[in-house]
Length: 213
Image 1 (cartoon, rainbow, N blue to C red):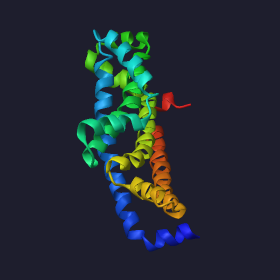
Image 2: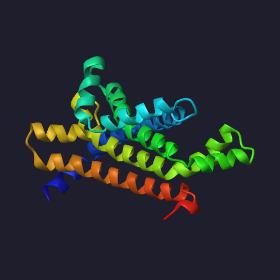
Image 3: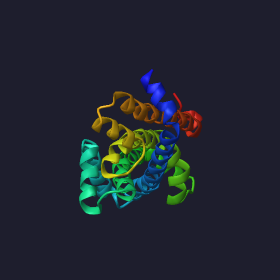
């Protein structure tokens, strides 16, 4: 009851922080998706196989790095505010996108690619008409994971002055006000669930019918 009362009384403030949270999320996540897919494609092209294996090893290992460590490292170099938070979230969101894109492309059957070349396709056509459609489920899974991780980590980024819903949570912690903490956590949870559902539907829609199970 106290949580609902707080949310009603401070609806304007919560909405302001909610929009800030969405902005931080979209700014960092969209850059991570574009850069992650581009890196994943680049390191799996002919002649870059060793680089691809190295990237998979590095990204696989860095997935175990705590988000607070990435945020703290960026804070040391860039200070506080929204821009450092966007950079930190970009770096942290990049990992699953690169890993899934690269691993998906590297696991495309060689026979499938050779058959496409035998039909007269160029390397570029093989990439976009054969490799990418087959990789879509794996790639989108990484993009989906990246989004939910980003939304949750954005709340922690409030510790370096990023704003967003994390600011409400941290203020509640400092003031030991449970309703305030919950009022900040509820919109974060709803946003993460909503984005995951939307991306889940997108994943099904973009996956070739022949690859759906």
